[in-house]
Structure formats: C-alpha cells, structure tokens
Length: 317
Image (cartoon, rainbow, N blue to C red; front, side):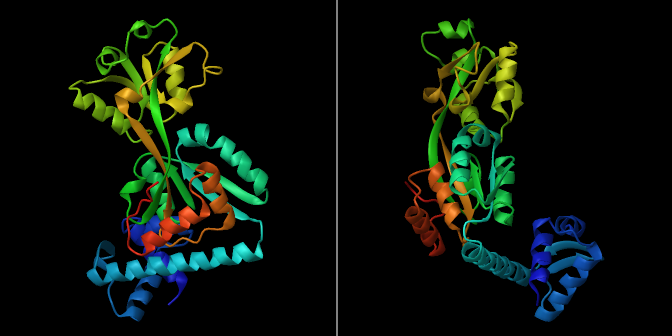
C-alpha cells in the first residue's frame, strides 16, 4: 500500500468518480490511476468503487470505510510534513488562505501586511472564490485556512471559529430621494432597483430572508461578487446598492452616501475554518490571532481538542 494509491483513491471520490478529472488534478494519466486503484482494491480484498463496464458508478459500503481511513492517513501524512517544516524550516514555509473577494479586499490587507512583516520568509497565497469553493479547498488541503461568511459552518469536517460580526449598508448616489426618508425601511428599498451581492456571497441569504419575512419582493437588477462593481453601477444610477459596511469608505467612494442597514438585515458572522486534525504551524496561529485577536493559540487549540473529542464543530466565543 502506498500513499500515492490513497491519494488517487481519495481524489477519484472527490471528483465525483470522474477518473479523468482526478488525473488532471493529480497531473497523471487516467489509466495509471485506474490501475493503482485496482491494485489497492486487490491488496485490501474489497471493492471500493462500484462499476458499470469501465465507468465508476458508486462507492461500496466497505469503500466508504476505506475512503474515510485513507483521508485520515493522508491528513496525518500532511501533518508529519508540517511538523518537519516547523522545526527544520524554522521561520519559512507557505500559507494558503481561501477567502471571498470582500474579505480579501477589505478585511485582510492590514492582517496580511502585519503577517508578512512578522514572517517575511513565509510564502502567503490568497485564493478567492465562492464560500462553497472555499470550504472545498480547505477540505481538500489546497487551502490551510478558510475565511468566509457563508457556508463554512455547514461542513462537519471543518472546525469553524467565529471571528467578526459585520452589517450591511445601503449606498446611494448623493441627492437620491431615499436619503430624505426619515427612517430606512424594507418597504422603501423595495420601491427602487437594487444592486447587491450574488446569492452565494456576503450575507445575501440574510438580505433575501429579510424581504421574504416582510412579504416584499426586491427588484434586484444586478448581482455581483465584488463590492467595487456594485458601487460602480450605483454611481452610474443603475440602482441602490446593498454591500458590506466595511466596503464603504467615504474618502474613496466620493459621490456615494452610505446608510446603516443593520436594523433591516441583522448582523453577519465571518468565520474561519480549518480541517479537523490539522497541525497548525506557529505562523498559522499568528495569522489567525492577527485576524481575530480573541482567537489566541490557546483558544484555537481548545476548539480543536474539543472537536477531536467529538464536541461541536464551532467554537463559541
């Protein structure tokens, strides 16, 4: 049994039983993966994948147990590599952060600057994607840490740590009639075209639920993943914008006015996610604490130990 065989096995399952997709991810050949999977099944004496001709159609019951064990073995192998890097590489290494555009653009710059000043030899990479992609990158090991508002707490294999609370704001061009309203309301917003986030991003689900509870249908004329795009189209007069409050800067966003909307849409929680059983290096603990000062090394270790012992997946502040 070889680690490479386990990697092939896990990646095939991760790619929805698509062997060619797994081969592309692992930079190898489809026949090579098929051969190694067969050899592993023969060695174990169990069939992992159900087949119809040459096509994989499902995962057998013993196969599910094999895959779970393979994932644990690969995770521990990765942890061994991290331990070696921790003590052999001293202050060098790599850190891959998966996050949304909003977090990368508005919440992380000061954190990244502080981190790189503290750990100049660490190669830091930011991967931007949807919350679902971010969670999957963390689960697959492509990302060491995941940061997002949506979705992370829906994955039991991730330990999630609440970091920050934030609220939405409504942005309007200076002189817009809604700025004369005595109090911002959902009914007032529903009268105007709206520009806001794509449904998978930045608390959009909370916005939708607020209108639904009020029995109103918002006129969303444009959805985007980027607050800067939203602000651009609001400036062009396309509609009112609903964005994360942190994305508005009066000095930079001249010609736009922001109205607080927390009373309409409530507050949102930015979470940090990491795989169960991960070994965190010193600089990873530092990055987490720079981003959320309450998440000290001790607090993170307590959350990880609790999850390892079978407790809840989310650490409560």
